[in-house]
Length: 253
Ligand code: NDP
Ligand code: 8X3
Image 1 (cartoon, protein in one colour):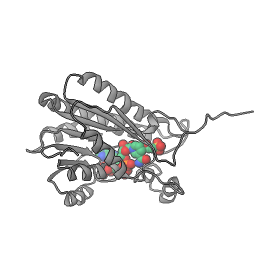
Image 2 (cartoon, protein in one colour):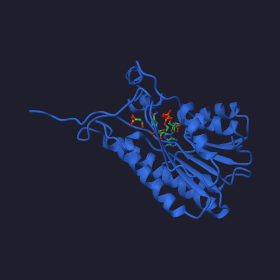
Image 3 (spheres, helix red, strand yellow):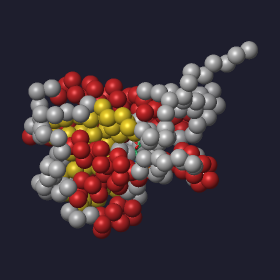
Image 4 (spheres, protein in one colour):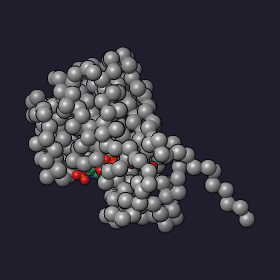
């Protein structure tokens, strides 16, 4: 496995779930970490566990001005980000589109699309200038496969996919790589957030099946970023062995 010694990795949403697991895996591989998220206590607890130095950013990615300010004033040696894991994101609600909350839709678009764009735009010029970098975006199987109640969540992840592909198009000829990692069911706080703290409903999502773990996704992210520099994994779609595809839903009268 290629070492990440000397690399600086920025992980958004690093205080929990997939982001936390990615931060741990990248740190264990030798990268120094910039840990971004809204809950400072979670970032501090994570930083204490990491074997490499880290810098904490208490940051809401929805705020364009906060993202720009935070990322333009990173202290050395954290100021040259080589690897960005755009992980911060969420699903809210599973109501059908005609009943869903427009506020929830705004929050998902602001976080999963606009927040990801703000952070990417802030780090990308430095990567291109140094001719070295890797953008890893957390998409989802929901980008490709619709399901009832997925509506805007799935659409935000389709945005992540299309943005990733278009970034790749712009970056041809540079040594900046782009990967869209698209997981299926991963057991994290994702469902608890989606169901607004209803732990029982969240638990039922993973009942009787073996979901992916955050460490499974971190393992894939680490694999993608440690390929030789000429190798770009564009899209990685991964599901638990216990998850599959639904049949077409036909309403018969
Ligand atoms: P978690 O709820 O466990 O973690 C989400 C992370 O995102 C938290 O660390 C949270 O930190 C952060 N976050 C949310 N909103 C913001 C914000 N506005 N600004 C900064 N950070 C924010 O869920 P997961 O680990 O499962 O989700 C991580 C990513 O993986 C998401 O993009 C999700 O869509 C994607 N994904 C998840 C799957 C799953 O089944 N779990 C499957 C496919 C994709 P804090 O609240 O401290 O800010
Ligand atoms: C989260 C996984 O299947 O709930 O992206 O959309 S799913």
